[in-house]
Image (cartoon, rainbow, N blue to C red; front, side, top):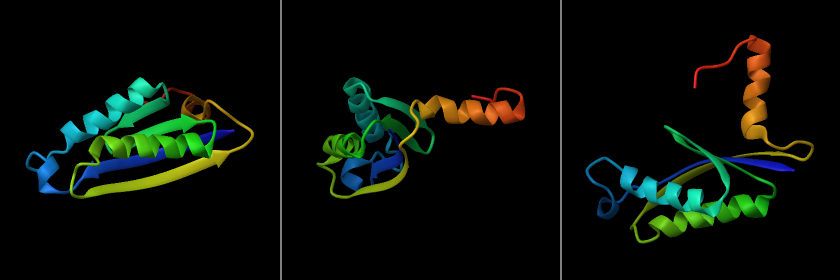
Length: 107
């Protein structure tokens, strides 16, 4: 089983932002995910993780929230793609598109 989770989480309250920037808080989240050993990819608009179960994916969300829980207000959006007959989809979904294009996509 493969659970792809794309999410964004960041504070919206002034006590955890530096002007309009939230990168300091996002860096805390990414550091925790990186240290957890979960397969992930950081993008400009969020983070994508791949786990083998829904519970593991939800644990990532809890881990992320723990990094910003002292903020007065936190925004988060989540998207899931759950597939029972596949794995390693962070790579294979891209490869599939590249096969149809007959070339690599820009990274």
